Structure formats: structure tokens, C-alpha cells
Length: 256
Image (tube, rainbow, N blue to C red):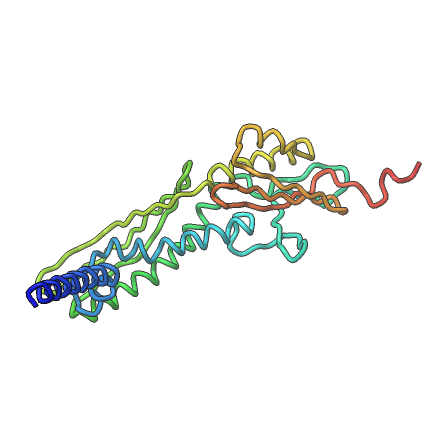
């Protein structure tokens, strides 16, 4: 009987220990939700970072698919995909004219506009969260800037706001960054565009020799348009655009 009771106690202790460990794991997993329900204060910087970062990635993908423009115009449609002309000539035998001479700057400008819209939504959500908890939330105009550098994109958000309850606390700037290879991809795209404008064509194999993580798809269409799709095979990021340079008339070279 003594040994049976002893084993029963040991089993009970093991069960209690497992329950405690399981409860601790659940608390860690669902802590953000529990904090929101319980009304515990949270860090606005972390909240905004978590809210904005998915939008950054989504907008980078959008701009990359549309030649660095949020509203795409002047494009060619091929297999259901739009390719923005970044170098174009409507005439035969003539090199194209560059449509966007500062590709990286335009990408940054367009991304900044999109991020500003997204950040305003995130700020309003943050305001609602604080007001639910009895805080007074006052805010001034929101602004944003984007800087694309090697291996990352830096977002600088200026959104001065003050949170008041028993005391007041003011926040001014929020910076966040994401890993990205878009800088290298845009550099290559700009170089290809310059070759198209100068020589009417580009030699893509040269880039692949120097950038082993880069893949370049080049597709020549019958009307003289060339489609480019530049991809980083590691990160999965890509940028696509079109060029029409030194186009030949239909049937050129077929007559003997």
C-alpha cells in the first residue's frame, strides 16, 4: 500500500508539473491577445512596426511588378502581365528614349506615398486602441520617407502624437527597416535601360557573371519590344519592365 500511494503521489506531481508548464506556454503564445483584452499598455513603436512591415513588402512587390509605378501607364500586355515601358521609341531604326532616368529615386518616392497611406491607417488603429483604454490621443500630420540601400529598405515615419491619461507622453519619429535585395535589382535594371537607350540592346549575361544570385529573363517580341524580368533567386524578389529600341518594320530581313 505504501508503494502504491508513493507512486500515486509521484504521478500527481508529474501531472501538476505538466499543467503548469502547459499554462506557461499558452500564456507566452497568447500574450499579445491577453494584453489587448486585459488593457495592459503596449509599446506604440512595436505596434506600428508590426502593422506597417507587411504593407511595405506588399507595396514593394506591387511597384516591382509595375516598373516602379503604383499607377501603371504606357505598358505592353504579354500573357496577361503588364510590362511598363521604361525606354521607348515609336519609330523604326531609332534607339529608345529613357522614360524614367532615376529609377531608384522614383521607386522610393512611390513607395513613400503608399507607405504614408498605410501608416495613417495604422496610426488610426493605434489611436482607437488607446482610446478604448481611456487615454486621450492627439496627433499631428503624418509623413514618411523611404531610403533604399544595399540589402535593406529603411522607412522613416514622422507622426507626432501625444498620449495622455494620468501623465502625458509624446512620440515623434518611428523608423523601421526590412531586408531586401531591390537596390541591386534596380541598379541592374537602370544599367540595362541605359544600354537600350545607347545601343538599342543589352547583353544580360554580363550581369549574371558579376551577380550570381541574379537571374534575367529577356523576351523579344515581334513588334520590337523587349521584355525584361530581373530576379534574385535567393530572396525571390523581381523587377520587370519593357523596352522598345531600334525596332524593325514587319517582314524586315525576309526579302532577298
